[in-house]
Image (cartoon, rainbow, N blue to C red; front, side, top):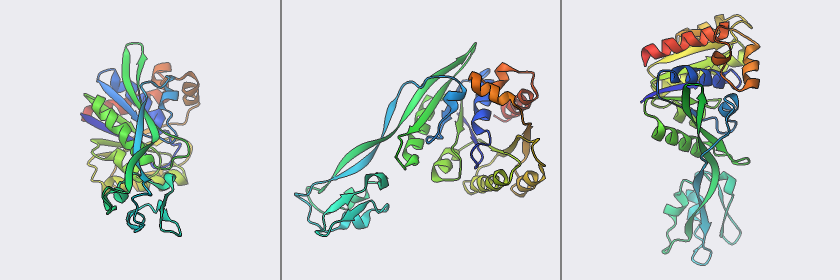
Length: 293
C-alpha cells in the first residue's frame, strides 16, 4: 500500500479540491481509496456529488457508575486525564459526557469488586464507504463524520483511517483536516508522500510552517509543497519557508473561477475541462506523484 496525505495546516487552501482531482487522475491507472478525514466538515462527497453510503457507528467507552457498589473513594475522578468526572459533596462521581475521551482510566483505577465503574458507550460519529464512478474511472471514498456537539475528533478520524486501510489494496489518499492537532498527526503518520497545500497569504504561510514542522517531527521522508491560488500574491515568502524545511515546491496552481464551476457541477475539474491551465497543473502534479509511487 502507498499512502499519500494531502494536508496544509490552514483551512480553505484547496486541500479537498486537490485531493479529489488527484484521486480521479491516479484512479485512471491504480486501484485507489480516498479517505476524507476532515470529520468536522467533510466535503469530498460534495465535490464528487455522491450520497454517503455504508454507515457504521463510531463508539467510545462511556463510564456508568453503580452507586450501590461505589465506596466514594474518588479514585475514578483523580485518574481521569480529561477532568470529565466530578465528585459531589457526598463524594459520588458525576460524569460530564462531552469531556470524556473514553480512555477507560476510571474503569481500570476503580478498586471495588465488582467494579463500581461499568463500561458503557456512546456514539460520537460515523464512517461511510461510498463508490465513486465517472465513466470508466472509479474509486472508493471513505468518509468520517463527527456528530454535532461532540468534541472528540480523534476517535472518528482513527476509525475512518482504519476503515480505509482495510479497504485499500494499492493507493490510499487521505484528505486531512486543517490545523496540526493529534488527529492531523495521526492522519499523516506512515505517509509515503505528504502534499502540503498552501496559498501565498499571511495565514497560509504561517500554517504551512506549522505543518512542515509537524511533518519533520513525525519523521516524514518526502514532503512536497503545492502553492494554490499562486497568482493572487507574490510567492517568495512561501518559497522561503519551503526552503527552510527542505520541502520542494512541486506545483503552482493559478487562481481560477473554473474551480467554482467544478464545485457546482460536483465533478473534478480535470474531468470537466482537462485542457484548462489549472487542470494541466494538477495533471503535471499527478504525473510527478506517479513517478515516485
